[in-house]
Length: 381
Image (cartoon, rainbow, N blue to C red; front, side, top):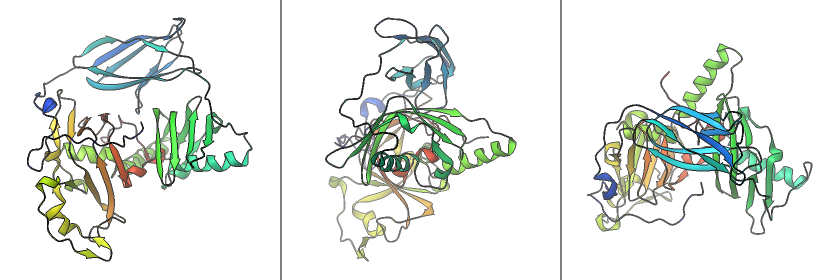
């Protein structure tokens, strides 16, 4: 999903807690139990003919199934709430649709797919073309990342990438069929429909639909290793941060979160500069203040969802990871998160089910497929 560049802050605030979303917050969470079973059929949009064995899955997760030879599918045991469904079939455009279920039971959803169109205006380089090889190295680096797990990741079918270098210096790419990435550090095969890839050093935007498939371990030792590496990838991740907010245990999990104070509520004082860097202690008085998770989290309409609410920017430090930050006295991993709509909808386990176009930069903005876990990953063994 392309990150939105225009920020529209909601006006309602409650002290420094910024409890925006008066429209949503007034709704009380209601206890819901049970699960949803999704059934339906995948067909060609024009002819109505079934598309046998189409992939039907929840975007960014390992939850999915294949339609049968008649295009019929069944996806049981889904949690109530918001789900972004994706459906793909070779030679057709992938369809994404957000569904909301407030009651358990069997729901019928039909999907109609359109045949894929040729990409226009894109230069297609030959497999051995030197320019393509150079651009492919950049795309591979930006998609997989450069952390310790990236060396155990591989793109199996780079030929599906259609690559172009624009006149303004933007490196762009799309896929004509899912890009397949094997991550032998975490034990996943990732199918990525790349609707958009735009790299202009050092900024990267990319989006599409992502399906995780569990690899089969060769033995129990590899199974244990994959689980161990998944836990390492989880530590300090966005999923870990959100789950810590919801459980109001940020400090226990090594996070410190500061919230920007609106201009109208700031107490302006002089700010000391040390070696060219601002110090966090002075900024606490006039720009940001530390907040607990309970200040940021509101109940959703359903028991299965929570709202992360902030009308202003959050600045996050991972106190367990030394790194460079804008503050001389806080040399830790640093991230900024903006909420253009003032909120996003998550699950208590840290699954972002309605991102609302949130913007993320800094350390957590560097997460790539080498250390990316499916949204439905659970930290409990």
